[in-house]
Length: 236
Length: 199
Image (cartoon, one colour):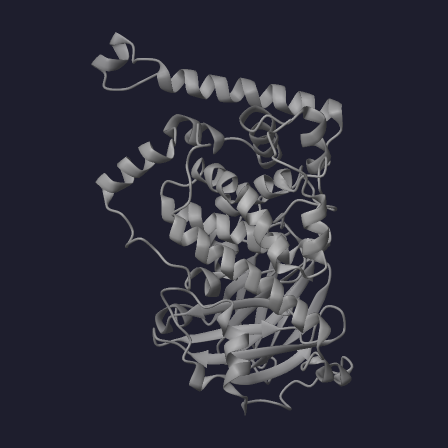
């Protein structure tokens, strides 16, 4: 039935050129030095707060937000900054970036700088100001970004929180919150299970609680693909 | 088997070695087939083009994990296109920077243009609606075997299904699709028509 449908020729030519460019750029990157690799020297230390508010070069901000920017809400690159660094699922550093956006809210992006280029972006979210104020504690986004389907990351808006805990009913993990923002991750074992976030003030008082689950990720076929599994993508 | 033209093995090997023209050649060979497949799931040309672009970008991004079937990359592309079409939010967002750079004929078409576009693209609304009811693995299997002409063995290879599992899943999917399409084709009974409903 649809065998005769064809792409617009102009689109096809442009896409062909863009794909070739993608291959060319990747090949160059693979041959050349990875400029972000030096950050690996941080060696998995938790550096929460030590880098709060550090302004970073604009091209770095574009890299952080460019892959995730929504069509409706755009990050204002010039306001971008490294909010804090914490520890990722493999013990390496996990960087949280923040920028104002065109809808009166914030855009956040999480990068794993130790991972290979093209697979560093973990999760990102652009929320309007109204959306962020709807609750004291709210999960902004869950995603696997450019990483793998065996782990997922989530961004949290945690108003007034000093830290947040993540509990699966049996174990509780404490994760940092900086400037009303936190970020966490779960492995595949915790997919499709009820999880509870609780935000705490500096004095240890509970501020708010939020329940959610991370849906299984089944984004692409190939080795390891589980055809009996869930829908593609974290939103599925 | 699906009518894959030629052998992708050499082009794919060259692509992996960084040969951009080889990857572009793969797009030349299979781009329109992926686009036609995407049209089954999305209602307009623009989105189908986005799905096609995202599928080929995923091919490159996941190149270490891509599995050729009988020296063809097409089954992998079709399964990925199905996934992308069903979960546009994530897949298209991942590649939005490139998608926004690609030229468009015009803005999003209005309703009349959409109907015309569907007609030109050969989209069958009943088939699209029925496909949406299938579970992920059954959907991939149905598309590869029934719509694209691959053998059960070939489809099972890319989907990691045993021959017996593939066979039973396909049987179930065929029955479900037939029931849904039959129901959609059946005119309302007089009683149902009187009461303003359908069966």
